[in-house]
Image (cartoon, rainbow over all chains, first blue to last red; front, side):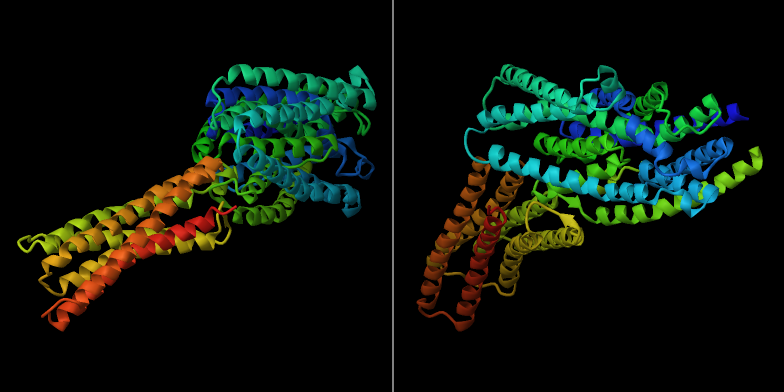
Length: 407
Length: 222
């Protein structure tokens, strides 16, 4: 029976991961494709590969939160019940995600898995089984991350607009400011990699040294990007500002993919990790970390979803987002990736999609967008309110059904 | 597809605004032909030109309603929505003034004195030239609102300056024409009334085009 549960969990988890790759990767890739910074083929490759890398090497924190951060492990004593509950949560979340894909409702996979876990916890252990303070923190992060991404998107585009788009000697200014953005991006990525990831734990550099190392490498890479930009951009013209950011947008597209993989793999892998640990040890082990091969499993199916289906979504969105120039796309991507990566470091499961919406709104507020429908923000808030109880309720139904079948 | 990006990005309203400006410009071209036909006593195509301008004005009105109907409260644009709608109104009124001029002409077959013909044609040219600036101005504004470069902003302001100049010249010719009409010897009052109102309607074309330019200036203000 445990084997059946594990296999079912892997199958449903694979579907969730596939869905994330098929739909959500496009949110980060559509802007560079629309701005013609990268081709569709490059977007699919970058999206798939770097999502896999982000999932495998940075994704453990959020997966841990999904696995043990919502339901109190001591509230559910029977490991068999716990594994059924995790499976039910995965099934409920995937059904909700399937329905929303079919009906084109902008629902977040993150919110649905968290809601499902709450549903299971309430049925299995009562209201006291839920770590309400953690949940409040998670829900707050859903509000904070799009707002933070909005602020970053606004700030970055304002800086670009005031310093690089108006005035004189724009191309020269872009060549000066561009490498600073490159350095900042690499600093955040390297810090994330070195601080408290499986890779960082193996290297064991410590906080101060990791920060100094990240700073040093970022400065070096900023310098190299400076040389690269000056060599590849020969013609000095006012249009050159967009050309500079075209190259930078390739970097931020990679950045978004890594951040997305790091945060969203947990939606599929978090529950599977719990099921696997119970299967392997026969007990509920809150201390056991998420196995890396499971993160790689989730990352692999995200990449497959992106390769097999995501290209259609990227292409469709890329055609729609034609007003997004390279400077705007860069601002959006930087805002999204930074807010999502920071949330991942804190173990908070945030919606990459909603952070992207926040970043676009931020750039829109900075007068960077031709026409952005702000009403979608209200709709998204409504779906926040709806998704939690709906996925919780469906998980309760699945759990009761699975308990009746297996127990 | 459950991506919110499907619903987040909308087509820029400036795209339809440009299309509207192009219809107004086309109407201006037909107006010139209609005036030449009217002043040439032997031309029989005035009614055809008049009808075509009326159709064009209906088309412009339809597009104007479409633009207004697709600017919901939650839509964020790089310019103030109220100013955008005001601009659209003035641009549309320029074509309305063209139509009003032709309607007015159609009510009576006035024999225009030779001494007024050259100035009337000059007034027509100023009006049509004003209208021709509108799609150019909208196109340059679209470029500026993407690039935010000083160079593109200057180009928009150049067109606005040209519009002001055309309006000023149009006003000068309008005043001269009115003065000449009132000084005409042995002309009946109805003819005087018909010609004076015609000159006023034609002057309104440049006035509205210049108003549109003023609103555009406000839209691109930093």
